[in-house]
Length: 397
Image (tube, rainbow, N blue to C red; front, side, top):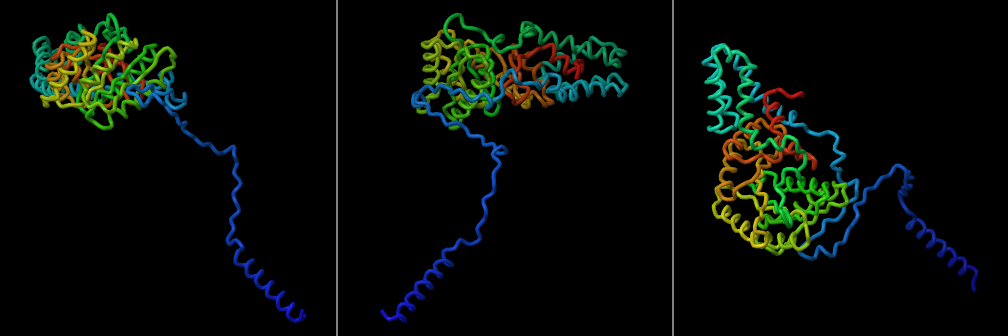
């Protein structure tokens, strides 16, 4: 082959190779950082598959221990005294200031206004005002300790008869009326936003911690997210319990739109499978919605076909911030459902804690539980003596 041709071919090959080198050469290469594995922490949520979730009843999975606080781990408890500081200021704090008026007639007028603006209700206001007006002399009305003693005696007379037994009780299990046989049924009522779902979760947690087998029924078939929210809270309840004897299961037939059918099937399951408790959630409704209020009667009626005494406990959940409106709600619900107890939520930080006195005085039913915070252990048994001392400034801060 001609030497010049060979040289030409070699030069062409070298040119092509050089071009490819520059074209394919990585540009702006960045050196990968060196990762210190000891400084990296990745939280990975485990993925669970639950075949039973395809059925009507969903067993709540056991969540890893660190995912939720245990009831026993809650160090900073919200005390009733701390929760009622605003109520004390708006109630007894204002009464103390009224004494600076000096004139007894003006003092009585001021106390009357304070009582009416403390969400007690007219009946209870007249009762307390009568005590101040009729039992205290003019000189007594200038002595804050005499006024306090008179109010304390009257409020105690209202609250003590229905709450004396609760003075030594500290657990949900203590304040529940227990069924003579079969599961104890607790029916939870109230308007939207009062805290029914969270209260059920907190009640369930305490019952599971006490070693009870609990079935929670998702009876709110109107609100799309209700069942899912209830499931989240029952999972928290199961996780918070350290007692392996206790268990939580949710009954959530997603295709069922009839709350009465949910109630009937849940109570039937609770009885057949030897649950200790069946807790029935219900859809929130205004006390002015007569057709929805009548529906509650039907729900109650179908449960009695399984257990004649059911529900053994009919509790209304009320938001303490609603004040006088909470009292009106309870009065109307009681006409339909014969309430046996009140759960008063969001008592922490409200200035409307005086509603407790009006509720008990007007309805003649006890306040069973009070919500003092957002933690799962912040649902407490109502203690009437601590309450009275707190609103009158007699408790240690």
